[in-house]
Amino acid sequence: MGVEELRYDEDGCILPCNLRHDSQYFVPDAEEKGAAGADGLNTSAYLFAYFEGRGERQEELRFAVSEDALHWKALNGNSPVIASDTISNTGGIRDPHILRGEGDDGFFMVATDMNVRKNGWGFNPGIVMLHSDDLIHWSHSAIDFPKAYPEAFGDVKWVWAPQTICDPNVGKYLVYFTVCRKDAQQPDSINPQRSTLDFYCAYATADFRGFEQEPRLMFSAAYGAIDGDIVIDDRGLYHFFYKGNVKDEVS
Image (cartoon, rainbow, N blue to C red; front, side, top):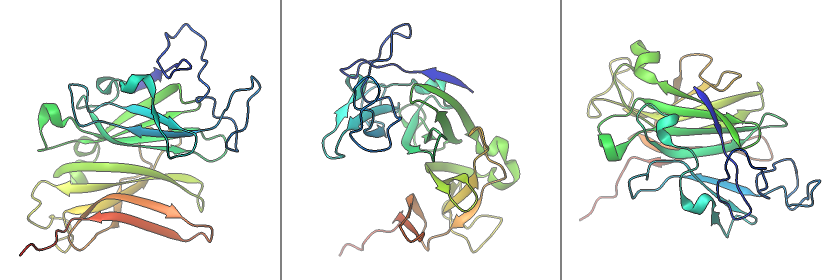
């Protein structure tokens, strides 16, 4: 656990920590797009968190910004904004997801704790959770599932693609992700009828450093699934999108 500090200049390059924070994109106080802050700068934009699949530092967090969600600019010259070995157990992160919280709750980010370049695809222990009030200072915690929950997740092979959503019914933040067991060809020992690429979820603690309770099964697709995304519409109806673990038969 710790805190990371990021500062950017007008060109999106990281500033030394002793310089004033001047980036027009990282003053997230305005509620309406295009609104101006006290200094006249645009204080609202779209922020995209991502990782790359090439190079020595491919599995590290990067940011891009856009004013219309169509045209994007990579910040910091497309270089990492936080070193993965300072926030993860494996030294790498993948699949980062960032969420702007409700009201004054700040910003929430989760990512897969995995270093494929170093360790391959065989195993990853869990996820990384980060929180910030200003997109500059980040607290972080790495959750190792086999160590934290040895009885329920001692046979974990992968914990992938976490995301966060605010549950308005309870006023808490729900983190959900895909879990794969070590023997993906066989049903798990707890529930023989369950597939081995399932979605689990848990409410985050108030400090966003862990879970209130042991993660529980959220959804089990017929052939397994990954990369889930929950969206709430204007009627309060939840929609769950995911990639099914199936392939069309090729003749």
